Image 1 (cartoon, each protein chain N blue to C red):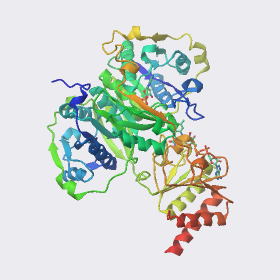
Image 2 (image 1 turned 45 degrees about the vertical axis):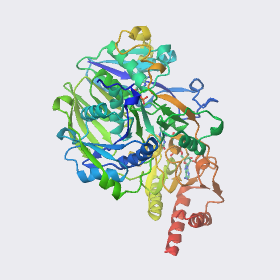
Image 3 (image 1 turned 90 degrees about the horizontal axis):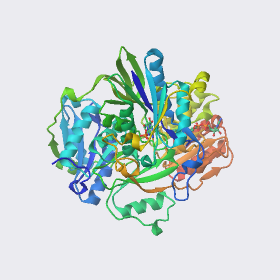
Image 4 (image 1 turned 180 degrees about the horizontal axis):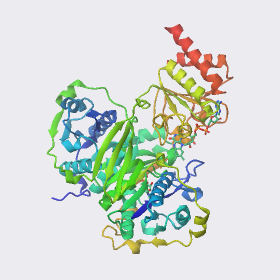
Length: 267
Length: 368
Ligand SMILES: Cc1cc2nc3c(=O)[nH]c(=O)nc-3n(C[C@H](O)[C@H](O)[C@H](O)COP(=O)(O)OP(=O)(O)OC[C@H]3O[C@@H](n4cnc5c(N)ncnc54)[C@H](O)[C@@H]3O)c2cc1C
Ligand SMILES: Nc1ncnc2c1ncn2[C@@H]1O[C@H](COP(=O)(O)O)[C@@H](O)[C@H]1O
């Protein structure tokens, strides 16, 4: 069987974020990381491979050429093949156009009866959680999102899907697409041997011409042009006026705070 | 005629997906109807609720009118009792293709975020995720920007139209983006639970609600998953989103997590609230994930938010900055949480927390 894992390289939003004068994110000025949920997706795929040796794990990413570094890391973690989908035509895509391009690329890799496509639940740059379900729809296969548990026995896939107030257990036919969240597992580290051979594993770059045969792919259906949604305005949230710092940290301070809260009818 | 999402002129009306679980409609549905009512008024169109389920309770359906719906489409079928992506997507897409709404709002719950993208992809239209503000009227949008952005609104050009302007945080809350979907319909958005205010229930409009029963076309063959079971979590989920007071703890409690949580509970008790947490504390396993506030947790807007030993990372702040009064206790006077706090105390939460609880209890006892 084959497992295709969609991974994205994203700006690291945990530190300081660089914003350009026009209010957009200065991606070039920021450090990048592998999207956290996608590493859980890759780990889930590798765990299935650990138990089923005939499994091939293919990682795929759409992004600019430097995305290669992340894909090499995925190979070093244990993936068998990597595919980078990269072309100027694909740039500026919203989730709809992104999923069109990724779907075409995944079809090129091929989705057979036993295969599974894995995504992260959401990418931390946009937090949309839309690309996974949209790929599933465009591939015409079932999806399960928010997956926190996977049981794959004798070709039967049973997953646990998280709800706000509990969970569902779902049996799902293959081929299918699953989106993973961090509760699912703890991603493994790169193996030393893996780092040695990550440059000798198959690595393919697909550009616009490589995908244009797909019925869904045209200049008007990918990238910015193929995106139904557009940014109307973007802005920084206002900096809140600094509040009141109270002197001291003793009983008197607490009583002072409580009397202010009382006067203002907050309590 | 075949459905064409680019024929924008053919679409009219505002729709809200009203999610039910176990036959009970989630409060997100009421919030979205209340918000949808304003949009429908600005556009001069009908507001419709969309309710899928089995043996749908008509009293519940009628009640949706009390929150603003003029009409409720009821899709009743045994295979719609519990949510499956396949069944819900099919039934909703069939209905949209038939009735053609211009705006379609879905709550950004775990289910809404599964359904929304699948529906949008099938209809071939755009979808904006996890919105926190919606406008159709440009003047209202400008008024919103004046209070929430640093944009010089009066000297900025805005395209004048009634397209839905969908505002949401991006990059973990570092930026806000307003998204439009000008050339495709319906304009779809998922909306963060707890962000839109529910209007007061109106008996009169509830009585006038039109119930429209949809002829559902659905068979087992449409569904490619087998729902084995749904398990409700044994302990009652905390209602962070609806709470008036949230007392949250951060990694500052790690010296003695048990005591730290006790202190938070004490404070929550005297203030009449619930306990929240930063992701750090959730990741460390001291408290369940349903307590998490922030980008990947819940957005809260209580009257009082107390942050005990929380540094104030943007991902946390984006989930609580709209609280009316923020009280922060942190032993580091330079902690970023003090930039958003209304009142700040530099000190040890293990000392300040109990004293604060005591002072509040004393104040309340004197007032009573
Ligand atoms: C994609 C992504 C999504 C995220 N989503 C969220 C989210 O939804 N919610 C969230 O909260 N975080 C989220 N985070 C994590 C966030 O960036 C921070 O790491 C996290 O909020 C830090 O939690 P903290 O403030 O409790 O811990 P720390 O940053 O470790 O801060 C602890 C604070 O406690 C203070 N302190 C220590 N001891 C005491 C004491 N005895 N008394 C008083 N003060 C004390 C310290 O001075 C410090 O300021 C996310 C991160 C990423 C990358
Ligand atoms: N450019 C991309 N390349 C590969 N996978 C992607 C890309 N964008 C999104 N994904 C996948 O889709 C998931 C959801 O992304 P998003 O909808 O952007 O939040 C991610 O966790 C990835 O698995």
